[in-house]
Image (cartoon, helix red, strand yellow):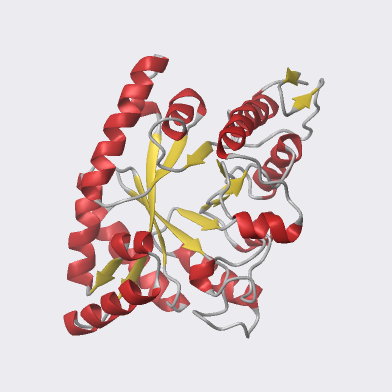
Amino acid sequence: MTRFGLQIPNVASFGDTGGDPFTYVADRAVAADRSGFSSLWVMDHLWQLPDLGGPPAPILEGYTLLGALAARTERVELGTLVTGVTYRNPALLARMVTTLDVISHGRAVLGIGAAWYEEEHRGLGFDFPAVSERFDRLDEAVQICRAMFTEHRPTFNGRYYRIEEAWNVPPPVRTGGPPILIGGSGERRTLRLVARYADRCNLFGGPDHIRHLLDVLGRHCESEGRDPATISTTRLGTLVPTATEDEADTVREFITAQASPDIAATAVIGTDEQILDQVGQLVDAGLDELIFNMVTAPPDEIERVGQLLSSKLG
């Protein structure tokens, strides 16, 4: 059964720096929780992304926000899409995600990746090493988090990180600990790390590219001696419902002109019928969960779309 998730990029509205950011996010989280969405995601950035207004636009720190949303929701899984490995010591990250799991009664997911927003790192004083080192750090961080989720007082000695008989009390609520999702579509290192360590992965691209990436992941799983069916595959994209096909064309032209090529190429835009057709193609590509942001949608529209997707394609 296909699942659907909602990502909330933590903005008051598209291009607007006013309003109450937490109420904005919380209202949409509650709408997702009571509709057909199965998961809720926020970004792990401290500066807003360039496509959403850049550093002057509002954004809330991800794990503080998820803790508050855990108290407002009842069903949806909760995670960041995704945490940059450079932002936190992995043992601290494991404790934070464990705390989220306890607060939410077993609904936490650890989403993590190699990080990319160099301007944010430089501005806030985070080290931003070369990409090869960031992936080496990701490899070690995932091992530490898994150990702290599942083992009693684990020890790990790596090149970049170490723990020694690390307590994690109280432990996670979910059996086996929060699922670990690795984000990214890199065919050589990212998908190999997914095959080696992850419970889930988040990919990017249209249906044909998704099929290709799933084939690559399958080959990495074969090399690692792992059944690819044990990895849940997800894909993040933008979804914009419209009342008419003409409106859909206008929105598509606007996004193509204003957004990055990756966002424009993967956006789902249109009437309900058009949305179901586009989403259906992604489902047919072999994905287990489709995650959408709906940046301009009010809570009632989020609830309606969640019910539409889950009833027709879930």
